[in-house]
Image 1 (cartoon, rainbow, N blue to C red):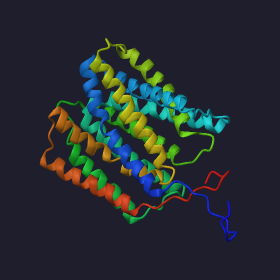
Image 2 (image 1 turned 180 degrees about the horizontal axis):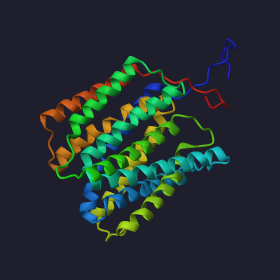
Image 3 (image 1 turned 45 degrees about the vertical axis):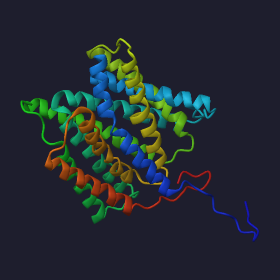
Image 4 (image 1 turned 90 degrees about the vertical axis):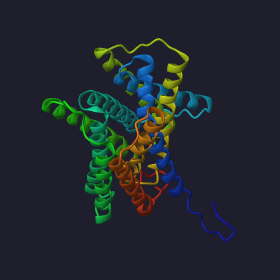
Length: 317
């Protein structure tokens, strides 16, 4: 389209401020997953892994319903689009299985520290190696601040953990970090044949079925439905899954995957706040210092982030 002077207008891409806001929404929404998952297991008797399977399966169903109602269905038509779907499905399933299995060995605190703490390092290294993010003093300092804050926030592993359980649990938590890093790296690389709504719905449905099948090997995956348990299942699929991941993938359209995983550190902050209010797990003084460091790392990321160039029509960017 040309204006009155005959000059061609530049295509309007996603606004970087809105993209950063979407990343913040994702981080806050993710923070509700631990509390909702705990309440669901208490209400239904499901295992944590089964709760993780329901989380992404129900999230996929909710997104699929929205896609159908709003008539936005756009299935991938090329191999690249389906590779993105199965890539996100695999990473999502890996995160749920590895993280919730790690919790059984080393507890929530250390599992969160390793999984959430390793993801920014993995993404930063990959982005630096591929030239998508410049490895500078600010980036390294922000990651170091974030890791220090996580250590103080989540505390230490529970007493009585054997060396073998510690080694296995940490390894599983690292796998969970790899899963989240994979989602971030895939989302940070535009793929025209992958429409966020349809693609996310397919990925979560596939990933949810895989997790529930694996969970059925170690325990029951069915439960007696009650109004409370059904409400919790829907909330777990809606807030920390459908809303959070769609907002995250939207934010990665204008910001790097490194920025995405650093802003996602709002998750443990939100989780700690909800745990204090709803579960009575109040923060200690060191944990409050850790929360302040995490918030500082997120602030540094937000103030130092730059908009990624919007790809021209027909190009991947």
